[in-house]
Length: 489
Ligand code: 6LW
Image 1 (cartoon, protein in one colour):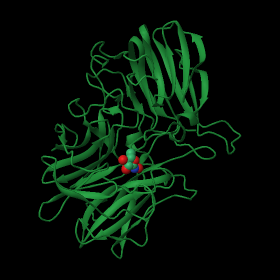
Image 2 (cartoon, helix red, strand yellow):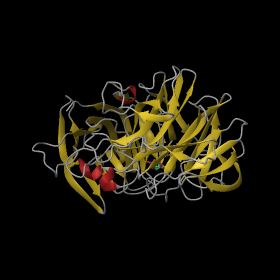
Image 3 (spheres, rainbow, N blue to C red):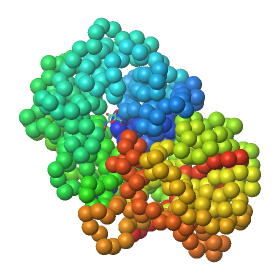
Image 4 (cartoon, protein in one colour):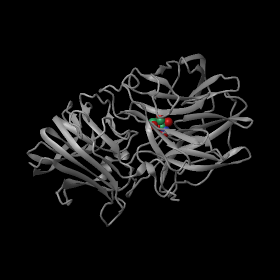
């Protein structure tokens, strides 16, 4: 077992877990990407495979182009009751709000949204008490009674336990009936280095709640642990009776203050119970995670693999594998990746060191391969058929940092993410990103090698992580294949 690895690597935050028999399911936040809410399955809690996305249709998820990055889909809760899966989530796009979805198979299809406008905040949780009454608890922490089949809420929201006095951001509540008590698990301290998990218990879902004296039950703040920002957790009892916690955390790299580039990832730890309170053990992970396998796509299938995510929507008029069978065809809408309506389809960067390559035909347009954090933070390599160029967008500064004549069609573009060169000191960044071209014999020639810190959450802000993907900046661009693989430093 590796003590530093996530069970679901890459930008997969806010995990919520549920078990049905021997099967476990996890869902995560997806923010400005479509489809929304990745769904994972495991039989052992260690090895997870993506079985789909919950929100795959525009009727389920509309993300307007004027919505900023890191808005959109926040913090779902997944529960199972009487043969049906229930998913409650906040769409933070303006005018959207809380919604409930149901399914009999978590791989989908999921229902159309059931709006729940009376839910008074983000991070909604659902729990049913003994008489079948359903309670929805949100960040803050407060609670309302809800009919999840209609989204209707009843009564005024009432305040519950809100964690340590003065601690910021009591959020991510989950309520559980365990033994004789109702347990209220929350995150507090903010989703940055102070993040933590605390718990309280009471005689009913409404409390009153008595905090655990050992709170926080999980935090890595102020430690040298390579995994930081531990928080936003959910509990599950395994089929063998043991207890486990999934939670989000980050792996910062480089000098000070440390930069994390993969976003917040999903980790696992065992839980034991002492005097009726949970004790969280060390991070547990498999040596190799199936969720982090190398990936190759020839775009031969009519539908994209569920690990592909597009910016804000995936209108078939702009992103399709059927127009030129065997290729992903992108039709530009925005003018560059700086534009919120950019046509971009990518996959989360899953490893600290990795490379990606694609074969691109730019005879009818301009486009290429990019490493993206948000509109203001991305590195791109693109061609318009005459010139290959590397673009760096960091904050308000956009610059073409390298060019080369590039008539070749198809052209193979590549990015490589590797550790920074020695010597390392307090100012060293987390990694370096080389962007270049590949010759027919497979030799990679870097056109530019850029500091990875500028594509980190600490610099760019927000709640997401790096996504490596394909884009069209003008006209029509065809991609014949895409390969992603981890690199051993
Ligand atoms: C989410 C909140 C949080 O709503 O970050 O870390 C927010 N926790 O619970 C966005 O993921």
